[in-house]
Figure: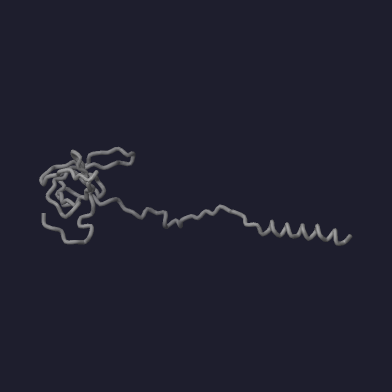
Length: 138
């Protein structure tokens, strides 16, 4: 009789041990330190009138839109509510290398990332000389 009573107690102890050892999933949340939450990026640099800038363009569907030296192209920027606004104009002054164009600002205050667009041609303003190479004179 004591053996029959001993078996259920050992089974009960075994089950309690399994339940106690069962992994429990607890959702983990980590928070950034307050210093990291501060704004680290400053406002984009504003490019003033008469500044020479670089534009990157790529072919859409394998076709590059014809753009001529001396062409005046409007430049657009999206505001914080996703509305596209014209912010200035540029004049194309030459090709730098494949997919890069030199231009001069003739109107407005432009920023990196603004889009120059006209008649199927579109290009984005990028840092001048992004690869650290010597540029050809325009």
